[in-house]
Image (cartoon, rainbow, N blue to C red; front, side, top):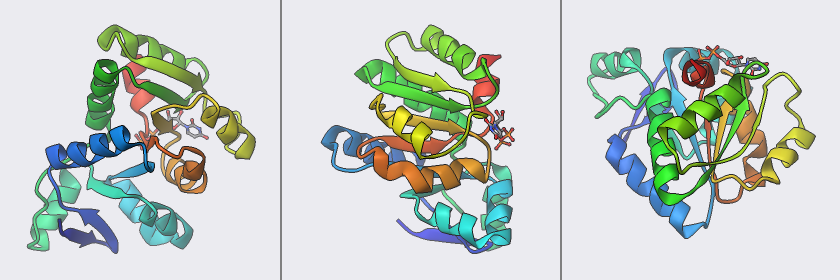
Length: 194
Ligand code: UDP
């Protein structure tokens, strides 16, 4: 597939179904991890301001367009992206898949108690998911925490630290998750916790 460059960020131009095909295939093969960035305007502008943040998001396997603003920008550039793929929508899609395939999910980020409530609601919606663990996003972001999360061997690592923290964390520690899907999810735990 082609890419559409918006403010120096190369966005993958593929449908959600195509993305899911590739991701689920990798999960079954267990050969490598997949780092997904859901690029909203905030992320794209942060990448413009910070070279180190841009370097982090360029480590992603997929950068997908999160929101109508990014879709509209691609139309103005006369290189329209095929489909909007938002982070919160992907969270639900992956939770549903995890429930069907009995995969495990780690919820890292948000205020104390929020990731736990989000996990409880996730189980209500998707009864067969396995919660690998939860951790609030204010206990630090270092190697020790990353190794603790990795020790639970999650199939999906959802990082709800907001941008730029979540993508910087994913870029730095994704090697500890050799066959997981690693994705920043912004404020998704707050929404899922209700
Ligand atoms: N957050 C965190 N640790 C931090 C800073 C933020 O866990 O050091 C969490 C915050 O509690 C919230 C999320 O990161 O749940 C960021 O939400 P925001 O709405 O800013 O993200 P967006 O959805 O706009 O990307």
